[in-house]
Image 1 (cartoon, helix red, strand yellow):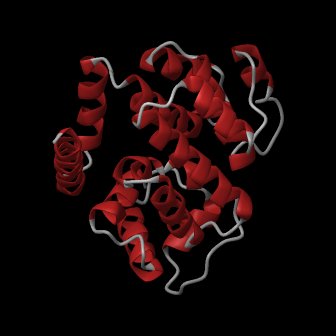
Image 2 (tube, one colour):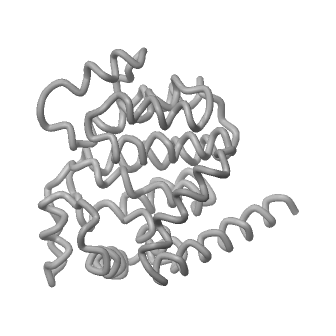
Length: 233
């Protein structure tokens, strides 16, 4: 779904709920075994425009491309809300997606951890230590924005580099594929360096998904390279 959101941004479809819905379903139906939640899985195969009153953490897990494609804070907020509402229309899902995308945007544009922490604390109570993140995973119902987003942001803030963020959030357990996606998307934007071996490994797995994915990866590279070149002019 992260690639679906990148596709929405690439096509500039973020102003049109029908196009957003169509692109998300196109990608979801093309890759039906990606571990979607039950409500989202049902939504993928609906033929109408109904959304779900869901605050599932998938809303935040997929939203990272918005932080890269948007040009300013207002676009981040507007695009993340539009993309989220078509499938997750609960306020907590909208908040989780927006806070995630804003943290990425701020990290990408040079804000320090103190700034990002101050921003995130307006929305969530963050965790002061790795042990506190682990403790928050005790119980049920972990797959929601209210738990996953503050866990992920906290892991990023406690990290020293991309890999330490990745190791910390995975070791903490819980719904760690989702929290890992959220935390590491912020860490990548902030640290701007990832071990080339990790990149090659990840791209190898993604590329095995077929030409649709390989084409989208090339498109993202081209879009972000063009944006970087414009910023340096």
